[in-house]
Length: 373
Image (cartoon, rainbow, N blue to C red; front, side):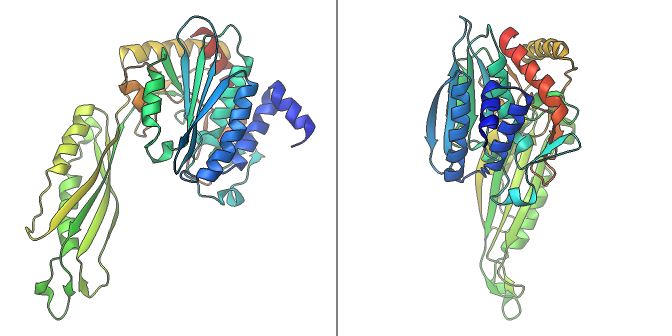
C-alpha cells in the first residue's frame, strides 16, 4: 500500500473505505482456514484500534480468532455491532472474482457477506461523536453455524441495550426484522451388502430404506407456517451390482416459529425403519433459533427508520429464510435489528458485489444510529 493510501485510510472517507474493503476482500478467509483468518484479523484489529477501540481476541481452534472491540462513550449501556469475517468462498476464488470497480459496483469474494459491512462499521465509528459505548464483535465461524462463537455472542449481547447486525440487507435494501430458524441433520441407514445378481435376497438395501425415509421427512414441511424440509444431499452404495449396505441424506429445516422447529425435530428423532433389519442413525439438531419480530424489535426498527430518513433514504423491513448470529441475540432477549449493511447482491456466488453509491448514506446512517439510537 502506498503512503498516500495509508494516510487516507487513517483519515477516513469514501476513498479510505474502498481501500479498506479492498484489503479485506483480497485477504481470503474461507471458514476453517485458521491461518488466513488470523492474517485478516490482524488487519481488522489494527483498524479498530485506529478508530479508538480497545481490542481483544479469542482463539477459536480450527477457525481463527474472534475479535471483540470496545469503544468508550457516555453512561448508557452499549450498542453491539455484530458481524463475521469468514466467507463461503474457497481459497483461490479471488483469481476468478478479483476485487474490481465496474459500473457503480464493487466486486469480490465475501464483499457483500460481509467484508464491506465490517469496513462500513469502522468508518461509522471513526465519524461518530457524542456516542454511547459501542461493542463490535466479529466472529470467524458464522458461515458454518457459529459452533465456537455462540456462547460469546450471547454473553456479550446481554451486556447491551440493542444489537445491530451488519449482515447484508434484503435485495431492496430493507432491514431484516425476522429470520427463520435453522436445523441441520444427517440421517444414515445401515443395511447389509450382497451381490445384486447372485444373491440379492441376502442383502439389506439401505438405499431403498432411505428412499422411504426421505418421503416421510419431506412430508413434515408445512408451507402455510413457513416450515420447509429440504433434502440437500444423498449418497450411498458402492457399485450398481451391489445391494447398498449404507446410505445417507443431509436435511435442511427452516422454521419461523420455535414450536415448528421443535415439532420437526421430534418427528425426525421418532423415525423408525420400514425394514426392521435396517438401522437408522440421526445426527444434528437445531442450529439457530428464529429471529422473531417483537414489540421491542419493532420499536428498534422504527427508530432506525427515522435515522435512515435523516441519512437520505427510506429503510424498509422484511423477513428472510436465512439465519444469522442475530438469531442468537434475539433469542437471548436483546432487541435485534438485522440486515443493516450496504446493499448489493450475489452473496456466495461469483457475482458477489455491493453498490458503491450506497456506501456514503449507509455509513452516515450507522453513524447516526451510534450517536442517537
